Structures are given as C-alpha cells and as structure tokens.
Amino acid sequence: MAHKFDHKKMSKLDSPQRRLEIPPLKILEVLGLTKGNIVADVGCGIGYFSIPAANIAGDAAIVYALDISQEMLDEVEKKSVELGISNIRTIKTSEYELTLDDCSVDFIIMSLVLHEVENKIKMMDEITRILKAGGIFSMIEWEEQPGASGPPSQERISFKEISALLSEKGYCDINKYVISENFYGVTARKL
Image (tube, rainbow, N blue to C red; front, side, top):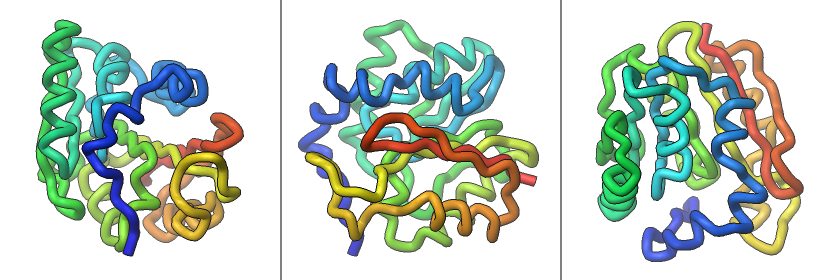
C-alpha cells in the first residue's frame, strides 16, 4: 500500500530548504502556467503551488485547490485570506473523484502526489477527465535514487513509468525537467 503524507507534518511542506530546491513560482512558469489559465492543484497540501498559481493566473482565473485532507484545505484558506488572494477555491475530494466538471481546467499541477496513489491508472483517468483538450498536465516527483528525505525508493515513480502512462492515456509533448538533485518535473499536453 502506498504511503500517504501525514497532515500533522504539514510544516515540512514549506521550509527555506524546500523553497530553494523547489521554487514554486519559477517552476510553474517553466511548466507552462500562464495568465488566464483555470488551474487544478491536485493534492494541494498547504497551497505551496496554489498560491503562486493564483498570482500567475490572475484575478479573472480560478485555482481549484483539491485535497483529501480538510486540515490542508483549511491552511490554504487561511493563507489566502492573509495574502488577500480571492481566486482560490478549496475543494475536499476523495482520492479518485476530483469533483470538477469534465474538461473544466486548462492546467493541472500535481506535486509529489502520484507516488502516493495506489491506482495510478484510475487517478490518470480522473486527471484526464477534468483537463480540457490541449490543456497541460504537469507534475513533480522524486528522482528514483533515494535521498536524505522522501519516500523509500520502491515507492518512487520513474519518468519512464510516467511517460508510458501518459502516452497510454493519449497525451503528447511529454517532457521531463530537472528541478534539483532530488526532484524532476513532467509536462504533457492532452490531445
């Protein structure tokens, strides 16, 4: 069974070290988020990507912060209020039901989530369902080699596995980006 991140450790999700290694604003720009995009942050956690995505997408766009943990969503709402951000909508979901309409978002970010998902095909079906044709699915995952932190190597998912899954689901323009020694990014466009 895949390991799930414990919401009680949410303070680990935003640290000076993590911001150096995974700078959210820069990464979202590299992965292709642009002004006006409707965004879904799947497994949003504390809003590490939701908040900068809301700034990039702009006030006229919506960022859906989706998570299975109400505690994480409460943190996103608190930060949004503190920062005066009004275009984030938090939604509690189940793991395989993202509760958004079919073809309703332009850009999906899923950071350090897929390795925690037991049924990756079912998750990708749901991702594909909510993404518009031509939309971008982007994700960040742990590199295969074990590091000082993160999940055990047998729980990590390789770019080769992700690429095969995306191809099977009909995605094109599948690209890998080196983020740091420990992390890589992926983008793919839905046909």
